[in-house]
Image 1: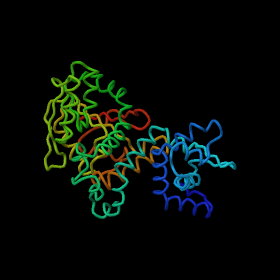
Image 2: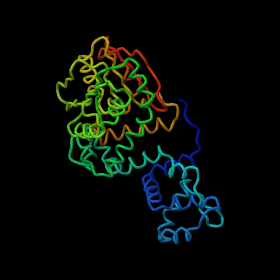
Image 3: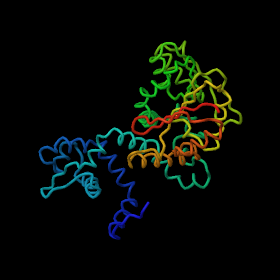
Image 4: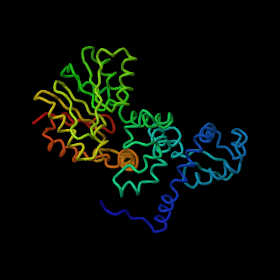
Length: 353
């Protein structure tokens, strides 16, 4: 990639934006939560509103509003005209009302913000040094069912935003061979298992996950009336010799492997291969950094890698498709199909070599 031409004064400006990025982020969070963005947007059509109007409407001091709106204006989040009236810019609109931006911001604020302070230690130690800001676990996955409600809500909202949209398309591929037994590896909240049972009346699902998450998933599937078709087995993929049984027609791993290091992924895939016969399909769905059509998606994934480093487990990331293909081949798998799903995802259908 060629070097970008930029004037020194512009480069200095961009450097200051990075130096004070946490200030702008917290300003944005405050303006959203205080209702300032909503009030400004509601008055955009009439040419904007003054600080005094915002102050009176929201019972906030003009001083407090001034410190927030001044830096928001410098960051191009709001605009200010010669009459002292504020309007939302396009950037401000997306920060306020774009669903992807909302889940990303809540995830950053509630799950990652304090933990990212420990990123340098995480890099040095190879451990999630920032996880202690959320709880006392070796990985975040051990504590998902115990997170504070707001943190848990933001974590699952982030996770589901980047998976729910592709389920319908993926289900058509999963069930074209009419599997009778599907292994759901990393069943999370049981959402996919529920969709499978709804989609096909004959399929049985077996979820493999950590004890806390498995309990939650089985409770959710039972609530939907699928307790006779959904079962589960607790498993720790970080143990020395994790095993899953033979017999599955399809093994499903969606946004699961990015939670592990390359060495751990290889171990997991080899475990799956031992449980497969020549007819078993292993379906892997991930969001790969080298398969994104838009720069904002690639940027989001690369930022998510830092969450894995500082908070989740200390040793995983959002991978390139080329890296996962190489690991699958090393584990004894052949990629039979390579399918784009939605805006972000890639689905691999793997068979045992």
